[in-house]
Every structure is written in C-alpha cells, then in structure tokens.
Amino acid sequence: MEADASVAVFGCGAVGLAVIQAAKIRGARRIFAVDTNPDKFSIATEFGATDCVNPLELDGPVAAHLVGLTQWGVDYTFDCTGNTEVMRAALECAHRGWGVSVVIGVAAAGHEIATRPFQLVTGRTWKGTAFGGFKSRDEVPELVDRVLAGDLPIDAYITHNFDGVDNTHAAIDALHGGDCLRAVVSY
Image (cartoon, rainbow, N blue to C red; front, top):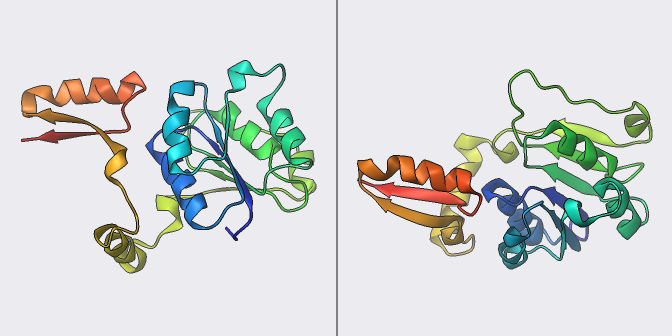
C-alpha cells in the first residue's frame, strides 16, 4: 500500500486492528474502521482509524455509504471478519479502476463468496492473503526486531490474562465474548 491511500477495514478484532496499525504506519490518508460493535471504535482510533462506521446505524448498504464518503470508493479494503457478505461489501466499496479488496478472514466451511462480474470488469481486484503476505523466514525477523526496538507496539493486543490451565476455557470464552483481542494463559 502506498502512502496517502484510503483504507477500509471490516472487522476491528485483533486482525483488523493490525491492518489499521499497518495502514497508519504506511501513511494512509484515511482509515475507515467498520464494525457492528461500536465498543471497538475507541481502540480502532488509538491504532490509527480516522473514521468509524457501524453498518447497523446506516440507512443503506455500507458499501454505498463508503463510496459516498470517498466519491468513487476506497483504494484498499480488507475483510477481517470471515463473513462472505462482508467480503462482498468490501469489494463493492473498493475504488473503480484500481481498488484492491483483500480477504483475510476465514469463512466457515462450505461458504462461497459471490459478486456481480461488473465489480471486477470495472477495474477492482479481489485477492486473498495468508500471514499478511509476509515471507516467514525472511521478513518475520524484521517484525520481531521492530517490536523489540519499540517501533511496533503490540502490548495493546493482549487484553486479558489468566493464570493456570484451569482457566483455559475462561480465556476461550473471553475471546468469543467480543471484548477480548488476545488472551494469555500463564502456566
């Protein structure tokens, strides 16, 4: 992603926040955090979101709303939800001519994504990514070095701590509860 791009991130869990953080680091001009849980917007803003959108508060589709805010669409969109309808919405708000929509979230087994061919023949690109596109052997050590140097803060991702094996289920429940980004269980 080039500097000064616009970005929409669908889903403000840990993965979505990492995308927001990366977009900010890369110099995105405008970063839309899209989530149905408005409690996540404060941390999304801390990570770099410039605008927060709750699709449940809109009169129409979120894609139409974002296209309206940006005139022709968002340069880069990222689905971090795994919901196939959200994947389609992310594609549909990508900028005509050059917008790129990236699927990160993993859909449930057997689910399929669909869109009208018009969305693609007007110049949008729909792609997926694994591990953020990083080559683990070559590029992850650089990320580790950045974390250790304090250039890439990650402490905010750990929102819950549990002690002992007996609390493993409590950690899983916290992750499913909607207010936990990552839980650490110490043994």
